[in-house]
Each structure stands twice: as structure tokens, then as C-alpha cells.
Amino acid sequence: MAPRGRGSIILTGGGLALDPRTWLSAFSLSAGKAALLNLAYSMSEAFKADGIALAIVTVAGRIQEDTPFAPDRIADAFWRLNLEGVSAGPAVAFTAG
Image (cartoon, rainbow, N blue to C red; front, side, top):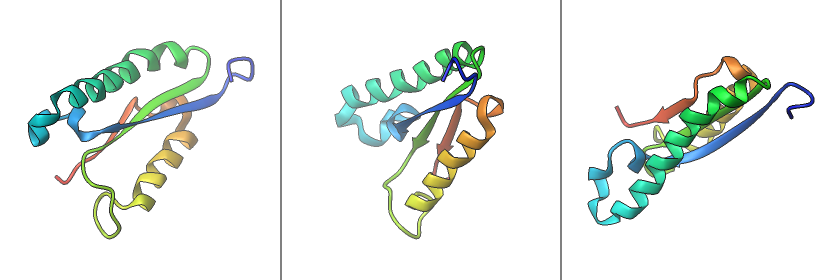
């Protein structure tokens, strides 16, 4: 991607990165989710210099049809991030609110 000066790296995170209180018994899982979110924020600027978009889509709910967490909606977010390239923000969050 760097030699071409464009490309996308899109990570998938979970809602425990945003609020671990929803599942306190999985505190170790929430730490990993938060680390991935912070990695995306930290590395997005470094990759941007080479024309590569690095972003994360955080799904803060159960993936299920006919909900805010429908697979098609999530796929659209990935596609939009890819099309926006480096002008896209480093994170998109799907939440119930």
C-alpha cells in the first residue's frame, strides 16, 4: 500500500472498549478491546503520512438483523471508511444511543 500511496486498514473492535461496565465479568476482554481502539487512534496518523487510512469500527452491541447492529449497516461503515481514505476519522462506533 505504501508504494502506491493509498490503501485502507480497518480494524473491528467491540463495545467493551467504550464501556466495560456492560459485562464486568469479562474485564480482561475489555482491556484488549480498549487497547485495540487506542492502537487505531495512535497509528492512524503514522499511516496517514503514507496515504494509508487506518481506522476501527467498534460494534457496541450484538450483531443482529433489524437492529442498529445489522450486518449490512456495519458493512456500509467499512465501505465508507475505505472510500473516504485518509480523510476518514480513525474511529466509527455503533451504539444503541
